[in-house]
Image (tube, rainbow, N blue to C red):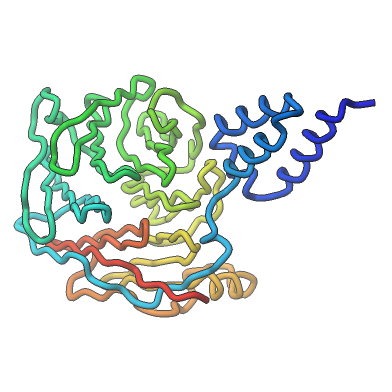
Length: 330
């Protein structure tokens, strides 16, 4: 006869394994391992259950679908250069703007530029080849120097804080950070995406090899990673474990409620989750679907955009727009 603690453990695993949440929790392996080690002690079964459920928990947002109703402008900037990347923190309303091949990041508070970060060099705050920027879940600026193979962290005033070397990579080019701190990096030499732990100490997984040709943007949402490949004009949508979920023609983004957004010329259109799911069986090529609404319209064509943490960042020639997405419950 199996010991009681083993019966409880196997039943618990069986129940949790049947949920999609458990699968997502694999990427939080430190919690899973801690939970299973706890289950070996009968006195601590409830503690183990709590840890496993914590690891499996994504958010109550998954249970209540919301659809975009409109956007509310946060910042609208006219610049004397064309930005190629922007990172925004809604914690302190800080905006970081990166130009092309300048090794400089402009810091804005509201509509006012308050600091310039970087410049060519080997100092702690300098870059040799700045290729991407993003903001951590705690509102810190993270900047990738591809030549130095280092991610540099800065505070909200632009002061350097720490370096994270990426010794295992050959040519890190693009990156983003998930809501729980997992770091996704595209390494051009190996042509794959690498998942690092939140402290950037070890590689958890690799994926995407032989799929990507010329990606120009990685973007994490609550459940997905979207990768836009410019050469093929395709967007690849992965879950946060690296499994490919969809391949879409054109430049797309997906939000935490799995509504989809598409850039077409000077328009960014919305396809709600419900509309998308109902039409899935009718049309093989989803680009033929009619959108539910136009959420952003510009006099100039948009060059790129991203959707993350309830905010749209849209970039045009010498212009940058940051807008909050206003949702309504479905």
